[in-house]
Length: 285
Image (cartoon, rainbow, N blue to C red):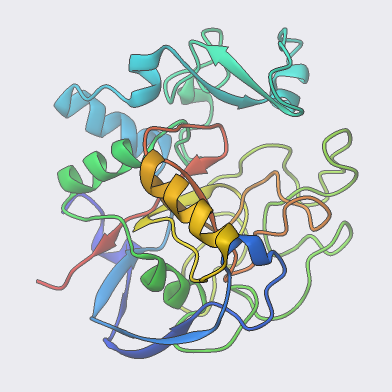
């Protein structure tokens, strides 16, 4: 195991629950609330950092999906702050040649400037490869939600039900202000934050809301018999979309209220972005 034992929180197996009966984004399949049963598992207290991922690459020679493709998705605001030209592909995203975990903002950048921040531009494929090397795996969505709540508790956020806002910015790294034009940075960060930032939840886990999206093992699926859900599920299966949890530094309740525990998203397994990373889960010996 390549993760220090003190950096892992362990949970006993047993009954728990996932989802919500009060979804904010119904089309994402946040509901309904349902009972689940979990086996004992451990999960990293922190997201995997750039420096940890660099050690993996140094020892294995692994090449990420973004490196093979030669580009990755970058939030345009990060580039504009450094006066980097940004072709407008999507409203606030651009496909940037040379962007990868090594060079998060393109060839002129270097991961060594933020070694303790969560590694980004890693796909689900990349995260699984790291997990196999480190003696772990990606958590299931059920495990991730249980861990984010600190156990079989009912809570909207990892810290409880206190709503973060543009002025109440003590809990997590999300957007404050008018997205995407103005980030007030009331939480202290425009982009990602170090993985040990902000108070941990009751189980000692950091940044289970905001900072970066976190890959889970599961195929993305909406639990509904509606025609719309069936169409979305067929698309997710065809594109091999995997679940992401936790939201990111780009989330704001007006545009992406997905930093709630029950919130979720799905992206293709080979997709890398400047706001997605991962943490590992572990099975008992």
